[in-house]
Length: 311
Length: 159
Figure 1 (cartoon, rainbow over the protein chains, first blue to last red):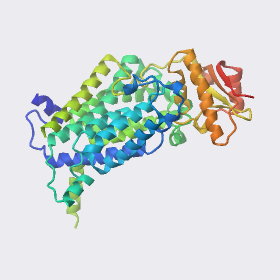
Figure 2: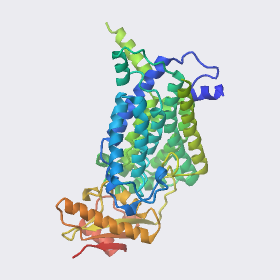
Figure 3: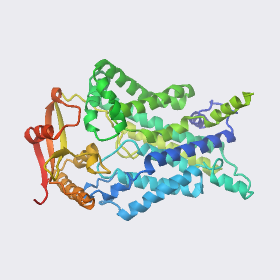
Figure 4: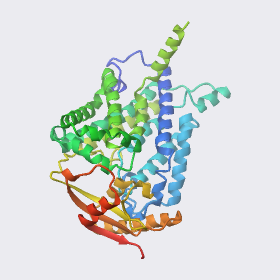
């Protein structure tokens, strides 16, 4: 069992001395700040999820937690849940009463976003981000760099003793959501399309169609219309299809081998940017998950050592 | 601390096992709460491109494709179509179509705009060679849909 958890934690089988609490709590805290800030900026900051309360009831097509409801929840409930979610996202970002607020945040987030997916249109962008919020919501992510830790210091309370193991697993859980989301997408392509998905004109046809299908979204990407240029080169489209499937299927490698993550995670981000400029689907909420892949502590230590070398 | 570590481990296992089960069994819409079969099917629509389009008739008689500039949020053009056709039941589609027309007009009236004259659902089959990847003007839309497509549904407002 220890070997399994060492693998999950990204440690050598025999354990490691590099596992320290300060680093883990710092990484988790920065991850919390970045995650909730991105969720706020890309999901909770607009009224997109609030506006589903206006859609006619006849469109009701329940998903997830609403599967057993024959009609939508009341507009007042949607309004209340939305504002609880919006406010608690900010509270979580600053680490305000995090232990109590974060579970409320996750529950309201799940209910609001699932409601938005229960009118017949199933998006692919938001739900993995919601799932990744669960380990963060249950983590002790406000021990440092938070309002809670600041208040504890002001009141002269001794700092909370944390668990490096718990912190690390929470971050690894966010990481695993990202790689599994891509892995599942790669497997789906191989299962439904097989090699034909890469060797045929499938991607080219999707690119061909996307300008029309998504003509009224993501105006920034339409300025470049890269898909219009790409479809002139069928072989390039095939190469991109191979690139997409290989990146997706290889995504779990990033979880098990640190060196692989240096390649795979940037490729995943490149894939997201590419999809935005060619298929007009915006994956910016996924950046919240990418935050868990950055060694923030190492980055700050490196910055400190650079500053120390300055005359 | 023990509780925290146990909770973290349980959540991790829940995510991994849930994902593996859905990936292996090909379950698309349960875990993690979303469909993952995105763009996964081979797309070879040779020789025709088949599509359903929702067209509105504006108060001045012009026709337009239903899109975000017609205040259809939280939908946008393609997501409205997807939501409309998600269930292959003509009665459900009709009921959604009628309520959507009412809903859009209520919105327009609230904003001081004249109501739409009609809402139509067309099915068109277009050879790929004639596929135009740009926004079509009124006359082109009329030619493509009104004259050369199959009208599947229409809801008209009071004249």
